[in-house]
Length: 106
Image (cartoon, rainbow, N blue to C red):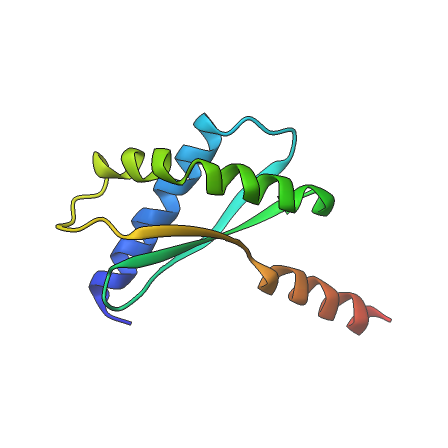
């Protein structure tokens, strides 16, 4: 991963956190875990975790409906030539780590 990708990932994570905190109405706790932009800088994924787990689909549906709002939110905050297309996904890595920890404790 290039230094530019790392910087953009960090900025996207911060911007996504601000967007979700200020623009998404939900009774769930939504945390932006990380952002990942592809090497061609044309698309990016925002990985989130949702508590409680049973609200994940609902939150993802809301975020997918608000993709254009998020893109517009990014326009004024992210200074790159072409804005990538965005997709939101549940971060399964955190769940896997928690499951491994649980198994190791037993």
